[in-house]
Image (tube, rainbow over the protein chains, first blue to last red):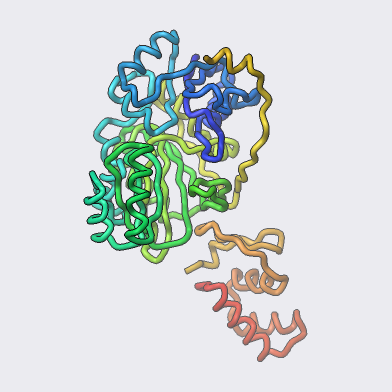
Length: 329
Length: 76
């Protein structure tokens, strides 16, 4: 089976691809993995370990649209399954209705978008106040309505905290320049502890498996650099409720803040997180079960990871050669 | 509020709250107290056992235990 995976860079903001590849190989050791890359220097291209790619191809940036993606995939040749691992790619695959993916419906995908997140309140999920803003004027109005501090978030990616009005304009322009508009203004969730949940939905409202962690260490932009598994029935209930409300099909990552208001959902990412191989190593192999779903439209429930298991990210130097880059250009 | 049933003692040196994911390094006396609290002994029995183990008066033991419970925020 030939499986294409994207999101291959494990830099200071690590992407999920190599972790997804390692997990798939655990369950499907015979799979041939193709890397879909946007840059010849993506670190995963240089790996020779369990998370290596067997071949790699440069892809048009997601902003080029679905047609460019389809043309490139056709030029690459036979691919049985595609696991897109970057948020920005998924709308193009939904647009193509590519049968080689396991993705949610367009409606479910839209309902978890940052500016729609508060609609999950009808399912009993607490979400900080969230307002979409199309320009700077609207951004100021949204900030004033919600009250400082607030988080300014790019429509698909990027976030920064504004403690007061003087910080709004530079953050707004930075986000719009990097990721385009509109942006989303989100109130600060009440709490200091951050929790992440990786999960896999069956598309019928069921949850195939999930693993919850408390972030032990974070990168400067808030990504988990270390985490410890927890077992909180309240969080498990929320995750099941969200999966059911959206009838989510495929992988997801939920980000919560926990404080005096309980768990508040601050983000719903439509893909596996970069730490997904951590639960896989402990038997909760969600990417492997994603392949099961693709192959047979059925999989067994993933076992729970017991509380108290932890991961610490460890960066190493991979060896490369200019010939590797030459082959990719 | 942490529940005693959610607390796991790790090698007598750490206590881990499986629900919140928080863990703390603890002293020998704190470990002893958590063990006896998890056994749901009566407070008077805990005081006697604690005082006996650490060779202190029951009055001192009671004060230590109350301070510990307040620190831990444990709900029995």
